[in-house]
Length: 387
Image (cartoon, rainbow, N blue to C red; front, top):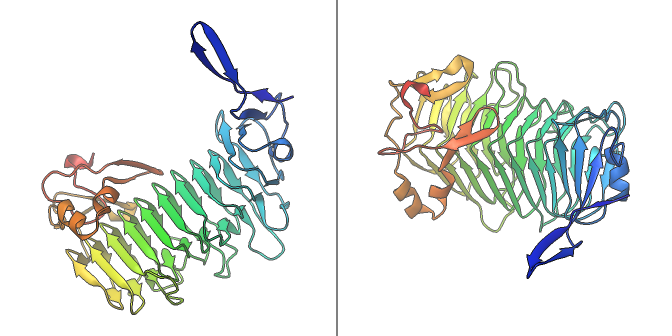
């Protein structure tokens, strides 16, 4: 039985109803369907699938072939555990349909024979992930290389994903058109990268990307083939046990896009290794590094980039709690009111002022960047008493 959501409009005393809107499919104990995998067999284009968090979905893997679906957890966050099972030898969920939204769902334990099992393997065109948690999979998210696909990830957490041989990551984005990652907590990739994107355009905006004390990732951010890339307002830390001396790499596998331009603006980047580079940038790329706060040992740059209003590397940058990974500014910080202004950023690139409007709020959230006077260097604007 399908429960249809009707759209009713009152007109001259009449109610005109249309069933053109989506069906609501409910999953869980006592619901229409007992598991997401069964719902995936019966759903049609445009449906809304609600998965009740009170259910148990261990080993319930699925392939979603429909378009324009919304799949979301209700009454908490439902947990999809692999427990040794996989869909098509690829993932817990394989998404083949286009324009899919996945909200408020937890994915863990994806293991497959070729050791690149993902929480979600995306093979369609267009995906939004919101309020989700991916952890302890061989890959968190693994996307295909559809040149017209667009992926948005926001308000989500990816942690401890990776098989451990360096080829699997917390997030891997193939050669798609456009990728946005924002307001998310990405940490503890296992040997691989925390974020890797081959997209034509990549926006990594106001996230927390970290290894902390025991993480073993390679790059914090890897954009191996260049493209138009914005890395803005992020809190980034390379831990003492990471596998690579570089924090952010751009074009490390060769520039293969028609436009190769990197903007790295207002990031706070901490290197807890004994040396290394904060940025490694390929020759012939157009890179601009502006308003970045660099903390720890190492050199700013391997390669070439235009630089303005960067501060550091500094041993003591005036952070509220470096050892607790609280990189907000205290009253002693030289970063306060020391940045290139928002209006000047807008003159350099029309949408940079839009990208600096928010700052990361832990865990996996955002807050308004309250700029009074000149913008501060780094990912955070100083607030009195650290509020």
